[in-house]
Length: 123
Image 1 (tube, rainbow, N blue to C red):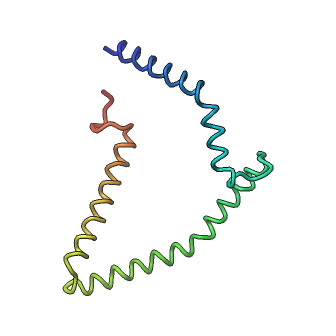
Image 2 (image 1 turned 30 degrees about the vertical axis):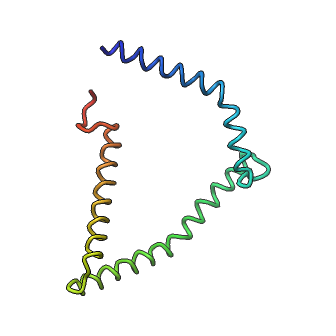
């Protein structure tokens, strides 16, 4: 059974390799042409390193603004909790959906962390 799965996997990998070797170059050129406004000149390792540092430090500089937004959101939640008797059904529904979404992302992360298995064991 494992040999049959291995053979099937090898066949799929061979098909994928053939497809990429046949169409990969065309796709690559098309992708670059569609996104040429994002390409920095000259496209060198040094330029990539510079852009990487710019991205890192720009993100780092955005942390205070993100922290401020977090505290504003937390204050809003505290205010809503104080006035929970005035909550409408829509607000409670939105809060429930948000909690459900957080739980779903947690579950998805656990599944990914286990190697895309639902039991935690490799079958």
